[in-house]
Length: 303
Ligand code: TUI
Image (cartoon, rainbow, N blue to C red; front, top):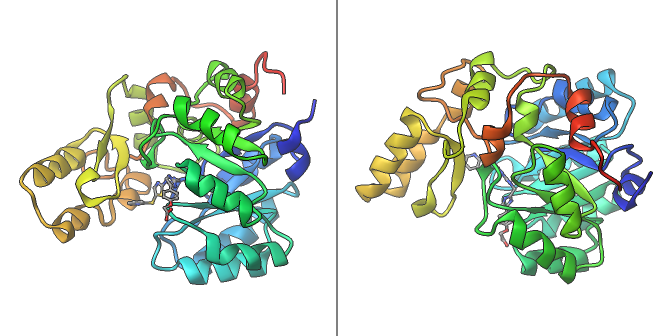
């Protein structure tokens, strides 16, 4: 069984592992690619030399195709993109912005380009600029999010473009895979469930926080600053809410988040760390190998 997404990338299952800042390291990306999906290294806010090392490390761990997610709000985005173009992974995924100015350079290097989008207008523009596919990410997702849910975003994007659409946001089991396929998607992107994979090197406290999360625990902060982020409720998100209610300045609110991802990922600080995760955290119940996660996500799914 092979669909357009599998053919485009030479992968066995049409699944992308989400490009989660800090969490999506070479180890996780290689494990997902070795299991037949598309592993993705997240550049997040890291400088270009760190991203280059991660790409080189992934190459020692897998012979399969993998991608690099370039987060366009990063102050290092230009340098990171240049480095990624030199290193030539199979595909560049972009998030948190419009990658228009980079597309020509990416394509000229023979790299596939698949932007994450959260609106119809940007999806159409990306297709016109030569994107190979788009990832339609609904606001059930973790981290930086758009306005629309996966349920309403995916079918609108499917109707608006001819290129393959990968659905993302809220998918944590085969029912979710079937649902976005029913909406017309030809692939899925899954982040949160892979935090709880054996191969993910995030701190165990972070993984346990995802496993413990209940239905309403993945909350959104930062709406007032224009960069809404979904993360598990803790002291940090409560502090965000307080500052936002008080009408604190943009700088004051943003300063709170500095170092938050590192505190959660590396130190296991589940109180003041930023435990970015999607609403599907409530559906993640155990830590298991990436290969088992992928098999479970495609149980009984035809593609
Ligand atoms: O990018 C993500 N998720 C992220 S990035 C991130 S790192 C971060 N850390 C602290 C604060 C903020 C971010 C954590 N999670 N997902 C993909 C995504 N892209 N969601 C929404 C978008 C998006 C938004 C606007 C894509 C394009 C876009 O374009 C705006 C335009 O110019 O048209």
